[in-house]
Length: 489
Ligand code: NAD
View: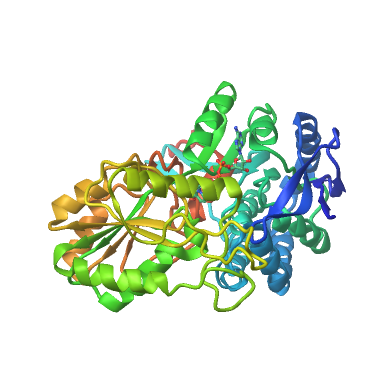
């Protein structure tokens, strides 16, 4: 059986303790590989390798670094099918979805940031003929990059590419549930000529390997994407070191549909924003609000299309949803559906039975039915807590004020979608929603230049374009005084 080993100083190596974790194939529930469960000694080795590589990598010209990153992007693109199949095998999403979304976005991460650093220009300012300020920007050192399981390759590379492009070295801790694409990425690093130690990868449980990275005094910045509760420990663990933190966390995103929307486009996109990647995208719209005039029509159409979604074999082109990532996660999703029933909410479609025939090859896989729940009010767990699965609520509303109150009623503030043909209303809603990203008449349209991140419990900091450059570098102002008075004599 394949063993996934740490990648430290350009070499694959086991944990110093030899400990391994089982890695499960979510579509069958069987163990598919073993992965290193790293301890703090392994993290120490990785950090030392990254520290050793820092002087060389940070002093290379931006052009030389960019060439290597572009090469990584090219090789990733050339091997997209291989990566997509592994991503699907490890995480559960359909292969075609990985090909449409994860691989192009992972490739773009390297291409974008490699090119971006070639065009960086620092600012300077004059002080009325008395002096000049200019800004120096420098890489910080070893970046700790911690990523989740839901978009394993795309989110990890979104951290690696800018961190390396500006001259940092890195120690990455991908989710222990989905290590396979990170492992394949290490072979791309080697083929592309990334110097040893520049990007190290350690696997294992978060409370051990992840925490060791956060608590390491030689790792001055942590970019973390994951759950809000995990982020609390990261903030606590990093506090004694005053680390630079970027926290991209959970969401409970509202999808607000006004009666004047383009109905067909709205329904079609809302099916995707609800159930793509089994609803395991932080940006999925898990709370749908529909204006009274079209509520019944929308619900009927939405439920009908939800019931037509194909759930099953992730290798098939017509499969819309594969399994969720793990048995524990499926059980958590089911417990929320049970909880909604106990709260008196009506399940319009879906529920806690597996959608897959138990005698089929996928009978033991972690499949969940796409589930739609009518929720007339917001004061229940399913409307407040992140489920992170193929479960959405639908709630009617009458006025802008009413829907804004409901939409902003959770502790989260990651993203929102608004569907309306009224441009004034679109701008008003965008300004008043508690969300780091507001999409108008669309969802998940990506632009790597814009600030990405959450409000409230959805995170702190912004990444993307210049925001990533700011996060992964330290800036210093230099102020020089000069005199405009001619020298005497
Ligand atoms: P998680 O918080 O359980 O784990 C994320 C990563 O942190 C994993 O690598 C894990 O091993 C590690 N980790 C766990 N405990 C740790 C600790 N004490 N110290 C350091 N590292 C630790 O999250 P998950 O279940 O992998 O991912 C799902 C969550 O991620 C959801 O809440 C989702 O909304 C969120 N997410 C957010 C975004 C975003 O951009 N805002 C994107 C994707 C996912």
